[in-house]
Amino acid sequence: MKKFGFIWILFFAVNCFGQKGKSFHQWAATPPMGWNSWDCYGPTVTEAEVKANADYMAAHLKQYGWEYIVVDIRWFVANDKALGYNQTDPQYSIDKYGRFTPAVNRFPSASNGKGFKPLADYIHSKGLKFGIHIMRGIPVIAVKNNLPVLNTNYTAQNIYSEREQCEWLKDMYTIDASKKGAAEYYNSILQLYAQWGVDFIKVDDLSSPIYHEDEIDLIRKAIDKTGRRIVLSTSPGETPVAHAAHVQQNANMWRTVGDFWDNWPQLKEHFNVFERWNQYRQTGAWPDGDMLPLGHIGIRAERGANRMSHFTKDEQITLMTLWCIFRSPLMFGGDLPGNDGFTLSLLTNKEVLAVLKNSSNNHPLFTTDEKAAWVADDKLSGAKYLAVFNTADSSFEKAIVVSLKELGFSTTVTIKDMWTGKTVGKFNNEFAPVIKSHGAGLYKITKQ
Image 1: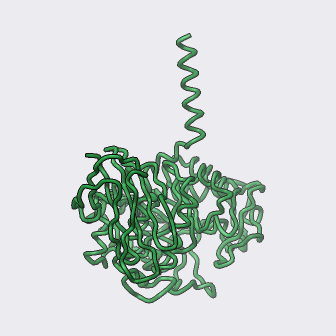
Image 2: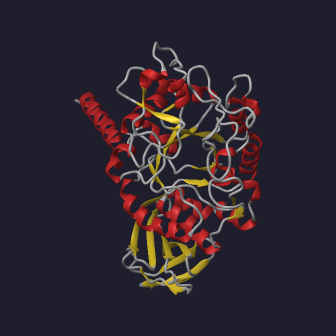
Image 3: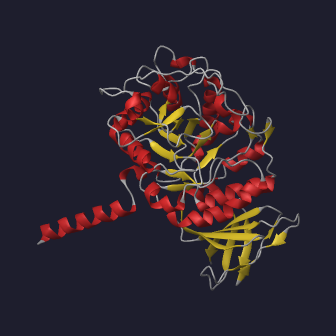
């Protein structure tokens, strides 16, 4: 009887975990934190620039939980450009099995067929993790040259389809998952990335405007087949909510919006977006509000001039507060060596980052056109976190009133400002912090 009982308990536990999460979800047990080259370098980042950002992260940010260094789009094109893409005469770097390889004029250590392994080794030597961006599908040039699929009798022409080709970048064709050789092609590229030492992969044109469920399934299986713990991020957004359950069970993070840049209307939109996606967050499966366009951006980017972020300081605090209370992944978009002191302070506030890492039961308290509030539990202490936002389009500061009784506090509480680290005071019944225009406050509420 005891043996039967143990087996029943084990069966129950396995099935419960299968419903809530999969083993790969443990590879991103807290929202991933890192740097991505897109907001500052677009499709033109170089090896020296990647290393400089890795050096900065290792020296200044690693101790706070920042760990990923991600090379974004078109690392395989030797002659790309800022403010768009070179689609006139791109010079592709590709191997004999139709797999893109790093352009050696931009990534010199990739010469002689070494790929990204030397760069990944360098980043790993810093105690960090390495990631890359890819486009869904198979290269058009591989189809035109009818290149073979590794370890098969199939070629690129056997597995491609011109339907649903990416509208904004014509490097790739769709892979038809129903065709023999399709899974083997995805297996071949993920095997290559695993050999390079890739820890994170961002797959573009996968979620919106069309949700490519078949290719997501192929990618998921290909990652698992490598035996390497490669975190999967799907892009861009908004991922259709109708497919929330599928993406949650196949990816570690997925986009909830299109490309996010440094302007207030896009930031304000996230309050409704995050409320819509809040129910689909789980450990290891994170709705992603996109990268943080903070610090020194636009150096050679797709949009805008070389600049420090156009967000005001109050808007930057709003961004970081909202991303942390929602528990979105944090992928910093600015060139890290170009940080000023204020930007660095946003990324190294241990108490604010603790909300991202350790909070639970995160949910909106209220959302209007002029104000918003979110609340969460501190899993470690039993206290509550409260984030309040002044989202009004006026330039005036205002008091945001929150009922403490609604939060479950019937006696006196102590409130601490998480951004300053200072105790605000003791309160009964309600708390009404004065918040600047487009600004935010983040607080820890503890019973007496």
